[in-house]
Image (cartoon, rainbow, N blue to C red; front, side, top):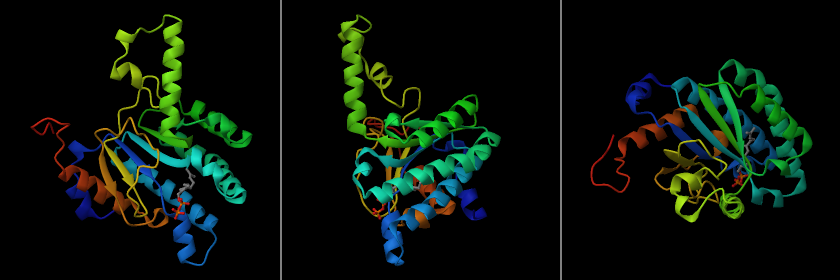
Length: 247
Ligand code: FPP
């Protein structure tokens, strides 16, 4: 991290929650004449670098889109490589997560994951459940529309059992039915890889997030690029639809 940037970040106004769409692994590999899986492998290292940097800086919530519901439709070889990469990540980073007081969390249809990934994920989530410095959330087999539809289904079920009435349903109560229950909404939604799309990620939660799109592909993304994004976030005036800036 450059000391120049460190001084340019206002530590008093850090984003609380940063969510990232880690895009561009495949293209990064293709450009180098490598197989797509090589891009994912390098992407896994970048996950570690960015998590370490965010933790050092004092970011409280980091949410990474690691695998979407749509990603199951990729070549089976690529899917199984990604699942193995996740399983390896959970084994190799377990100690680091625990030692750094990070709580691991997951959002998505966790039951869709292969048994090994699911077991390791749940084990590290349980072991780290009392950690309090940062919440690292992996979005796995995640899709925002299905999250919202599932929330509505649960609300209808609870309503038929008299647990919630129409008048009691507020935005706050609704968000308690989402996977992200208890988490603050992202301050920043960042996407690497040049595309300017949301791709079914946290649609409800990003209503007021600052959207930051960067050209660099995920395997090339560095802590210093994240610093730049935070500086950009701090530069923007956040008004939440009101007239005056509140920060
Ligand atoms: C998008 O790039 C990336 C993914 C679908 C997978 C993200 C996975 C990682 C970064 C590594 C593993 C994660 C962890 C948490 C260990 P793409 O393949 O869609 O790239 P493209 O748009 O260039 O094809």
